[in-house]
Image (cartoon, rainbow, N blue to C red):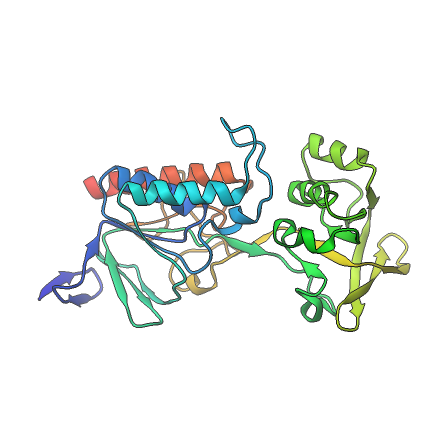
Length: 321
């Protein structure tokens, strides 16, 4: 039996327990990249992932702006990254549920709901994010029965039908164009009088013959019986409301960081994002963070990959020192 002395506690582990050099919590673009870099640097690395390998990346139907790759999709990128990490020696455990964290001290511990515990000398937090919801009447009722947050997953279900896309950023406009492959008509509903997207995405949406645009408006209610049939749309400047028949609604209004379980563990800002410095360090020594969960402005596959790279290199430096 061996004992690991931590700054705040004594951790008792049996001879069967293994203390990893690095534990990465999350297997999206940031977590997988960190796993590739750390395991290639010969750090004994474990990735624990609660959801699908690849995170939000696997929901992207087409990636056309990944440097060095003409066009691909998020699912393919995620599978290649997973293979790279494993080939370099990274251990990946998916579909786990984390019960508790103990991140202070020289040895970090993560306990799963099934009773297993894992220990490491350092941690990279990469839990990613999830789609933001409108939180209006009917959303919970028709989620999966007309309401979707993923064009890649559900676009085919709306072949030959009419759909609404809610949002005005890059994701909303790009997914609206993607949905035209299936739907006969796509209506974009956006709350502001201008889009918050790159110019090429705006022009592509505006010039597409299947896309209609409603600005300065918000959805107020989803209505239907067994499935979604209608929505109530409010024109914000006038307050007037109209009812629109629709087969489906796709919501792309941003993401929320998956950090609820970290509120008493790590420093978060007022948006519940993990606060990090330029080296992806958090306020806890030996704990780093990367990806959509951190305080930053842009959330792209490329920025998550960059975060994961920096975090892994910073961990290597931390362990050397």
